[in-house]
Image 1 (cartoon, one colour):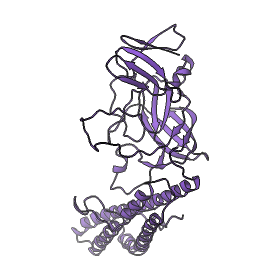
Image 2 (cartoon, one colour):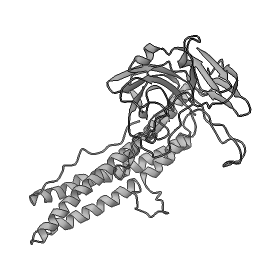
Image 3 (cartoon, rainbow, N blue to C red):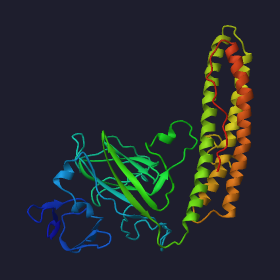
Image 4 (cartoon, rainbow, N blue to C red):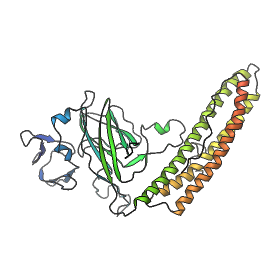
Length: 409
């Protein structure tokens, strides 16, 4: 592997200088006056004449690339160790805008480099739809890809990335846009996020699952899938060397965060069931209105309206539905708010949970248990009674599921 700096750009050879290609991924046609490969990070650092210094992150995959690897449908290069770190507010102004120059850092996480060979893949540099949302990774060559803007969707070819723990359980799944040849994406060293209440399909509208808590240091499996082909590898996640936190403390913190997430998912189940039941009631009311015009029963309509009111009041105890309190009014007397406070506090450090954090989690548990008791009573009594009335009128209604229960620690 050879690199050559010239007056008109950077060139690379993969066969000892027999053939040369101009390198155009993240480096312009500029005078390359000095080259050095960082001995630890394997970054190619390029000094130019009066323009800038460029860094091509981790060129180590080029050391093993060959015609054979490029011919494979999916080839995963060795993944370098990934170091966890916490970043805080930098010195100086908080929002300097264009007042000062700041270089762009490489994405935080594990750099996963792979090559794809398929007829349906676009070539690098061709016009592409918008990129995937941030937090999932980025697509591009060495130093060439950019994270997409929040909320953007991306059509076209994508790979599926699955990260698994030491037990083989998949803890993170995301998709990323790709092109023909070498691609690079970044796993942000987090688990999948927890399900949250949704007013419809808004949770899936961006096409990605939000990130969850940080993983623990250790070895994780990585699988890249495209069509019927896949490639697997592993990545070592190293702890932030600036912190001396016992693994037992980190495990206790992750367990607390996972429990808070399980509470949130119970809320999501409750809200989904409430909204589904209310939709069923609305369907019955629509039928009853049509029959009432022909002199049909009205008692069922009154029962349906009362049940919908009870369902709406109960939903507000779990979370603040969109439009329920006005744009400037934020409810604080619901379970989601308490869980959010507990989760936010737990996620602020890697240390063992404090008494205050445990207390906040217990507050959320107590309110959730209280609301689940009311939820199960409403469905066991009021909803069941309404179903009997509906069936007595010769109409149909989807039977509710089993009662919801609190997750165990």
